[in-house]
Image 1 (cartoon, rainbow, N blue to C red):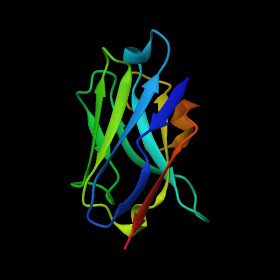
Image 2 (cartoon, rainbow, N blue to C red):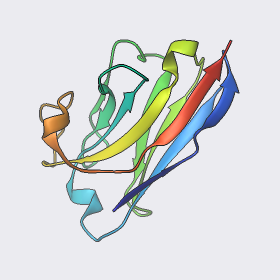
Image 3 (cartoon, helix red, strand yellow):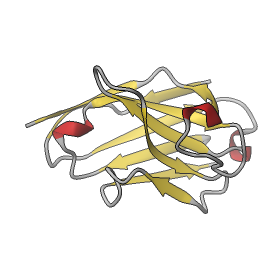
Amino acid sequence: QLVESGGGLVQAGGSLRLSCAASGRTFDSYAMGWFRQAPGKEREFVAAISYSGGALYYADSVKGRFTISRDNAKNTVSLQMDSLKTEDTAIYYCARSRWRQAVNYAWSSAYDYWGQGTQVTVSS
């Protein structure tokens, strides 16, 4: 089970930190990812991290502004979002990859478990 938290309303230029808590004892065996879906748009890849945290991947739209990290001791993966823009408004989902490395990390089909999502709204 994956449970996201940390969403909310923030002004453009502000920051938010999303967290995703995972249950189970195999969290550190899988890569993790964050996706988002804005109203009327398809779900899109945001960031991914390998099982060890040694490999990080970002969508071009968030590179340099967002940082993904994980704490395997606490079974959590986080997404630090800085310099937020109105176009970052979306529901954000964390997901567990089918593999240890972030294989095909931008494809939603590469993930087999999803959280319920947390709303992020960035106002101008």
